[in-house]
Length: 557
Image (cartoon, helix red, strand yellow):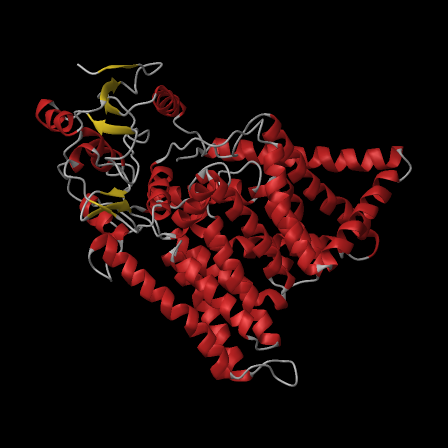
């Protein structure tokens, strides 16, 4: 999405205004009440610090806090309805895995069901790595795919706390996890859709939380968790995860060479390396097996097939490919006329898409109160103890900028790192010298309260995400629910108008198309439609025009 400069300036101005209002309001209210506000906040901080010092209990608390708080706001923020290409693709993966399969056979009438970000051949499967699909499969096994999303976000916040506990005192680690829970656990597309970044964030937190623990003492548990983190990254965001793991690998080799700090030392180098290999070797074998089941080639990833078929530009220096011919007008509109003309490898275009990335990253990971941490931002980034995290942030962040289309969850492996530096900024504010210290405390408390306030405002207004990336296809869901409630088995032909937005795709199906109670098919003309009608002769047949206002379901003629 393109963001005009005046919009960026307006958002920044509003954020600065909100910061000033909250800081001034806290200051004035505290003076009017004779310091009672400060005393109350100090008391609350001490209580949270006592909980934070009980490290295992704090991790469990954060996990269940996310589940409870999201359940509380459920009347305001309903169970999300899928709407984007990625969401339906991940849901297909979850449905496939929950039925005990890694892929599905190509349907004999696949052109009528061919859709975005889904392979129709050599097998019928999602183009994406399987980690998010496994999370959704857990939810589907529990009765609702979204439950897998909630559990993954809760596990992410718990993993962030575990990671931060290795890098800073317990109370500050707890603050970082609490901020992450507020940012992603209520009004974020990470928990209010099916395509967020929780899984990769878990992987990044495990990798960067295990390394300092191994530095202190070599233990098999940390080696296994390090391997698990790498495995999750490889199966969620493999390219970004690889970049993140480069400095981690160098640090790990340095640890193995220099030894642990504690005496007597922990496990031998061979035991640690063997434990890590015991996780990574099965992981890479599974990835090869998964690729083989989906693409027929252990070294060919599903996403690569999608790129080859559609000629999608990926990197900033890629040039537009020649237009391709597709069996349906929606693919032609999306790949030839939308992606094919929305970017050119020029300096101005590179600057534009890079600015858009920073805008979206800021909306996703930050809030207005982060502006109050600006005075200590440089000092936080230069903290010697966090040098590995700074290098990781710089390298992986730069890697994300060379991709044309980059969403905030593409760098979700860095989530724990980002919140580590946000907390470090708060710590620096609280440690300002002399007469500036009370102001530092005021600014740090205002920064945290601003996140609580904006989260409450979004939830009360039913705003699912600051970027609006959780707007589902409600009309499609209404029709789907109605047909399921009517009973029987149904076939729906989707007939788009020429001006249809290809980003709002309706043709997505279950993993087992033939067994689905409702099958969605493209309207591809009498010959292909006749084949579909004969194949599904035992179904009630309908047609729908998604571009009508509202869409109307009627018997197929």
